[in-house]
Each structure stands twice: as C-alpha cells, then as structure tokens.
Image 1: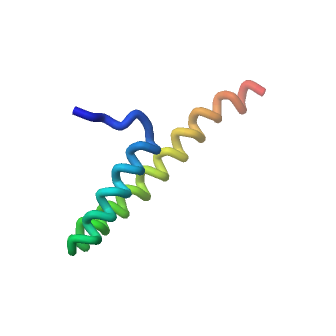
Image 2: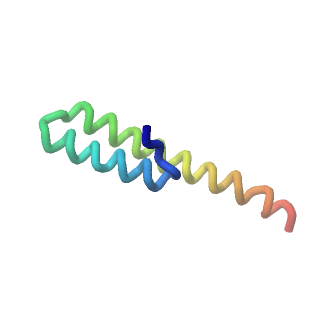
Image 3: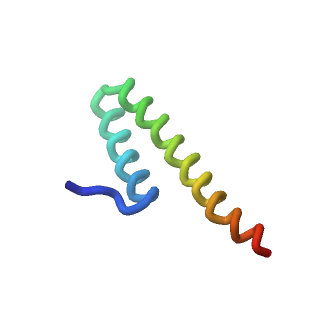
Length: 59
C-alpha cells in the first residue's frame, strides 16, 4: 500500500482525483475533494506554525 510521504504528495494525489472526478461527471465528489484539499492546506499551515512557535519563544 502506498502512503504519501508529506502534505505535498497528498495534495498532488487529491488534485489528480479531483481532476478525474470533474472530467467524469462526478461533481459532488469533486466538491468533496476540493474541501479535502482546503483542509490539507490549513492543517499544513497549522503544523508549520506549531513547529515555528517553540523556536520563536526560544529567541
């Protein structure tokens, strides 16, 4: 089983699935994949902020 190594790979996979869904008349699935992509971006930013917070406090 293949598991993405990071957020970028997961985003690429979701993008490909979204394009496929939209091209094949699966509008509801494409919308749900859009939502998943937005959540992935938000979580990625949150993770970066959490990782940077201790470093900022140490300064």
